[in-house]
Structures are given as structure tokens and as C-alpha cells.
Length: 76
Length: 139
Image (cartoon, rainbow over all chains, first blue to last red; front, side):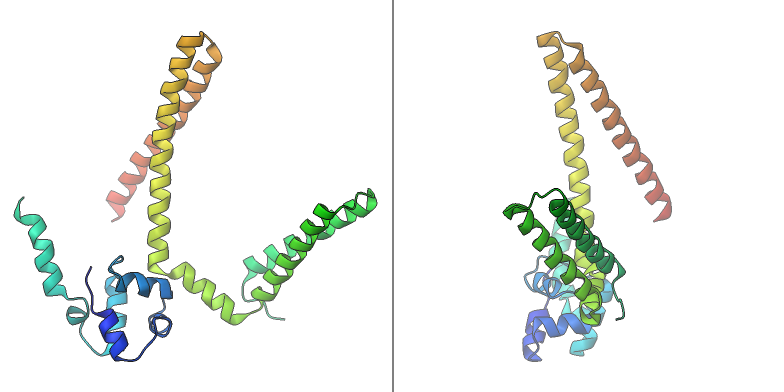
């Protein structure tokens, strides 16, 4: 899933390890989220959004991701 | 010394104990050799390391975090599921192979092995079925 975690993290001058500690996950999880290999749970997304002071919708590009997901169902 | 991680502490004690037992046995039997000494040294180093780690609050927190990490949990779940599926497929293929071998070599032992594999496969299929039912009801 596409997210803006990396953009917000670099804007906040934060390392992956620092963010990981703040949201109680391993730094590998943050790396995977930034590489779009892993989709965070709702609670983790909320924790990260809280750290950056943004909404989950904004952090996780929900509108864009929904549009992408909707395409899968178009042919059904 | 406060123990924060009991599992790591007992693992360390076990390793040191095993090393000490190995060393005692080697000395008693007058069978002291280089490979044995390397093994004893490795057991002592790993054991003492585990004991030291078990008393570290930072390490215990890090380990707890690794256990609770949602990505780690997902990986564990996926890998176990995949391993189960691969085991089922391998069991099925081996069952077919042993049945063919039983026919080709006319040896009943291979039929016995096939029956054992069928039994294991049946258990795995039934377990999967009941687990599926359980989670259908629970979730």
C-alpha cells in the first residue's frame, strides 16, 4: 500500500529507528512500510499519523489507494 | 541481579550447564581434544551471553517488541501456513511415489509407508477443516 510515511518522516528529520520506537514496532516494519511491501494495521497507521500530526487518510493516501483497489473490482 | 527475560536466562543456564557437563565428561574420560574444547568454549560464551542479556532491561524490551511487532506476527503466520501447505503437497507426492514403488518393486514395505503418509495427510486435512470451522465461528 502506498503511504507518505517516508515523506513525513524525512520532513520531521526523524530516523526510521526513532519512528519505530515511537510507534512500538521494529525498524524493519517501518522500512517495509516505506518500501510499500507491508500495509500497516489501522492502529499502527493511527499511531504514525498521531506522531506526524496528520490524519490516517492523509498518511496512508486512502483516496488514492481506494481508487487503485476499485479498479480490481471493475471487471467483476 | 534482576532477571528481565526468564527464557533467555534459563537458556543461558542450560548452555553453561551443558558446557560444564561436557568439560567434566571430557576430563573424566581423559578425552580432551580441540573440537571438544571449541564446543565447550562456544557453549560457555553463548550461555554467559544469554545470562547477561537476560538481565538487560533494554534487551528484554527489544525482544518483547520483536514478539509484539505486527509484521513479525504476520510473517510467522504466513510462513507457518506455507510450511503446512508445502508439507501437505510433499506428503501427497511421496505417497504417490511410494505407491508406484510398491507396484514396481512388489515390496509391501512401501505400501506401509504410503499408508502412514495417507494417515498423516488425513490428519492435516481434518485439522485444517476444524481450524477453519473454529475461525469461521470465532471471527
